[in-house]
Length: 310
Image: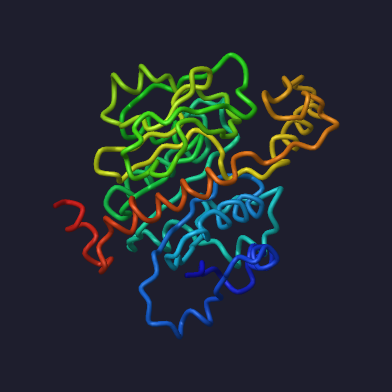
């Protein structure tokens, strides 16, 4: 089945060029199918780039998925055209009375900023709490994973001395969990963060199941026992050149970044890196939609709160 997105969203043409089946809103109206409703709270500055990356992964499933885009506030964006935001994004006030099968909260370039100093921290907390009764399963990405752990478990913000950047080998720890069904015993995944996710801290102070982790990078994938919250500390949605673009951006900003680990061929930034995590990312998002969203969500979203309370 296809992914359903607004007719004019830039991701539509991109996905069609990759032979990914995309259904427009106008065509979907004529199908008698109950699609999964997934809302994406996009906190990244380059919103179109992030939309493309996430929608690409969400499209790799036999389920029909209806995507909505959510913005945190109405501040002017330096990286995304205002007409794009006005055309495709909703405010939280517009959706607060609705229910969703799934939600994705993206990362944000806030690794060195205290939660209390984030301009929209109050709004993030409100949306995370709202998701507990209005969303069947929420996927927290990178900085959002750290924010979710703070809001839902009161875990302190842990920050690394040096930015973690590169491709890191992860070990599958609980292979029988549906979220990691089909995963190899070890796999590669991009990381790009100052946030630290110590395995021992999470194991001792939460009830989360740590599904995958790395000796050098810490916890990678965690889930609540009821499957309603998933915490992903890396970026399987990244394209092959995303880390290279971040590295060169930081160089131009005078930050003297370290070369991303295990990324450029022969550690030569003049050589083009290859995507070695695409199959992992597709399988992870497909498993999340199937086992953590579709399998637990009510058919009638209007009974969401009753379903969750049970």
